[in-house]
Length: 317
Image (cartoon, rainbow, N blue to C red; front, side, top):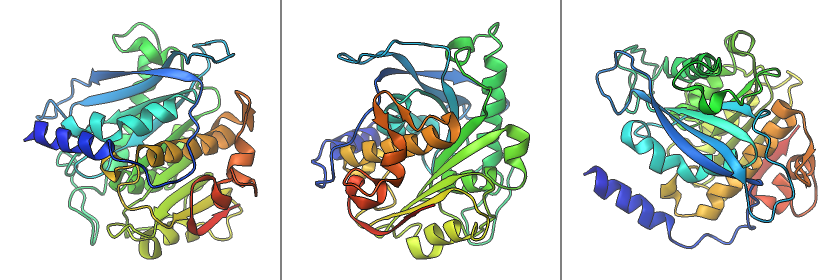
């Protein structure tokens, strides 16, 4: 069954894109490693963290590969996205984000709920109420790895922890990212920026760090009107840097391989990385690219003015 699912995902991803502008990738080649957590979770396929990271420089790039200055992002998958599916589902997205100079860890846990820590929220799938804690645990785990004397030292010895970390996630992982960006978690875990990809949530605590909220008019699972927009509006009056991206043709699977649009996945990665460049790295320009112009620009390459395709609503503050 798993082979059939993966085969269908790959076949869908091979279809042509929907005519959006061509995505920009970062200058780094990337690699992927999977690590076992050796916890007490019974399913060994969920007892893992996958890590996407820069491993070299793309052909033709004029930058020097420096392994010592990459920021860390903890990414939380959506429902059914953990276990064995974590890698094929988000591979394009997270390789593309890592190409901009990020080390990204994605938990495999809680594919259909966190049954080892079951808290169920009203109207949500069961046992996802504490899923955000798995996202936060990956941050602690990565820091322990970065000490340099453990089996998981590579690539975490190359993380720059001095200015905090980022968080991102899709669907139930988007909800996890909302929760991890509130409830005092940014202070405890030194989280500086967040990106939500089609977050599914009926609970809307206001994020307390800069956040970019992606949704779409074709998303019938986590609709823009009832989930995407309320997440954005939860921070009204806060003065936070924040953004709402309501893409006209985007459906719930925009971040994963089932969206049938690899260029669209890479566009999502590009603008997600641009947000982290601004509010995690604090580098508005890098690699000859203007990330501030990508996010806030009014030209054709700007997020809300054509750079990510047609928008129903788009606002960046």
